[in-house]
Amino acid sequence: MRRWRAPQMIVSSLESILSQSPRPSLFHSVGPGCCFISGSLSTLMKQAVPNDFIKWSSVGFCKWYSRFATGFAPLQPKPLDSIVDVDRMRDRSAEDIASAWDDYHLGRGHIGATVKAKLFHLLENRAIDCRYFVIPLWRGSGYTTMFVQVQMPHILFTGLEDYKARGTQAAPYFTVTFYKEFAESKDLVLIRGDIVFTSKLSDNEAKWLMETSLSFYLNDSRYKLVEKFNKQTRDFEFKDVLQALDMPV
Image (cartoon, rainbow, N blue to C red; front, top):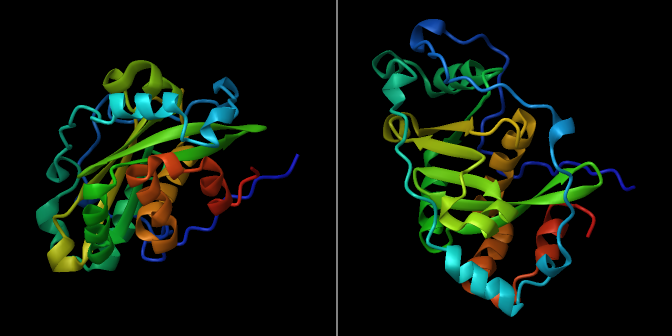
């Protein structure tokens, strides 16, 4: 079997996870039930991409797509001041804030990242017309396909098969929230990923999904596939996504 190689993240403005210790005084404690623990990959279903997903122009897909494209019910974002001491962070540099934010989320069952304000605004603008996409997640010897919805300030991920079966009643496996409180003053937008079902996704899988979805919206070449999926659905081919991610077709 060809060994799968994780694609290089092409959005250079996403801050890498830094090794410096966080400043605990900036953050509020996380109460019971707020921390998720990664589930074992051995319990996850290994699914191959169905053959009819390679070409999306079938009547069955178009009928199904129009039925669920209304989206998930809106989420209520967790206020930033319930996570961090916003007033104290205002006096810190963007680099200090990004470092503390990333480090704070390590090992907590959450994903922490940052992005430049300019790229966040690009994501916002592109998501207005193109809210949906599909991303293959490699597991073992095959793929499971994740359905992505961008509903600012959130990105939601759920299994495509679950969404086909349950429509808008399907619960997200993983949610991403953007916080703009420091966008103007620090040129920095904070990103927090929350794994809803640890039995469905590991921390590493969630992090990869978040970075990969951002790359498809922020990289001009990859974004053409997002546009085709949303605006020219009958011409969309899933194999183009696989090739963009250097995955075997």
